[in-house]
Image 1: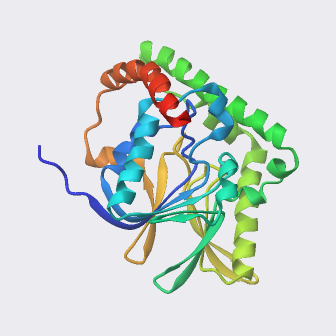
Image 2: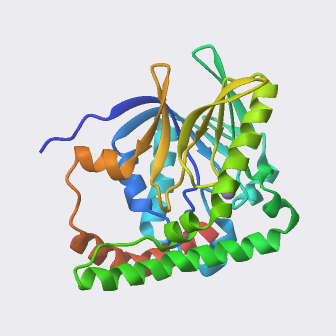
Image 3: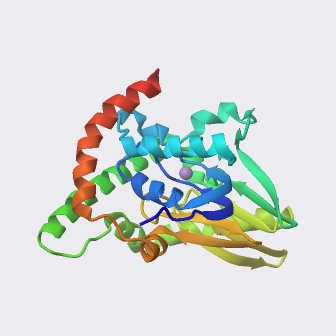
Length: 284
Ligand SMILES: [Mn+2]
């Protein structure tokens, strides 16, 4: 098998990767990144989860994602890091520009003559703004849920049963979560229409989406890049068109997956080694 040619993409938007948490699918993300050659990458918030850093969870695959992106930058890819609420510590660096790398809160891009307004989206999140500690508590709970889910799925797998997603169940069964998503999308669209943007691109709510939103005042295309905890999605803009890349469907369709057995073996070894090695180098 020869090396596959990388897919050229004008712009890739990734958000809510949550590196440094148990839920992050870093090796899947890495596999996706290795299939593309992006001219520009927008990291739209919650990329490195600094709220969870005290847990000292930093496996090798998480560091490899960072290294891969830095390597792209050294070649020709422009990288814009827009901060989210889990990496808000970087907000003090907003406006920083070093070579092909820049940090900001938001960005407006001209794409084929149309204006795209891109930001993480936590500004619309009232719970986050008014009780940060409660939101943090929620984040810890969510992470624990993902960890618990891994254990549950391991057991289910042993008994030859289908995998389940606890957090998806919790979210989907709660009506207020749906209302939350709708409200979020509506607020983003309303403000984007008022300001005459053609596209509004967010992350934050872990809900990939691409749809036209029409109000009395006008129309906008709302896009959300989803996340790399559950949905494993990205936004790609190419030849004047947006699309949602869905790793679970799209990647499996083009490549044979590494058997789970091997993946788990490798992970277990690397969790401890990576945790100690990489985290120590990062702290230096
Ligand atoms: Mn967020």
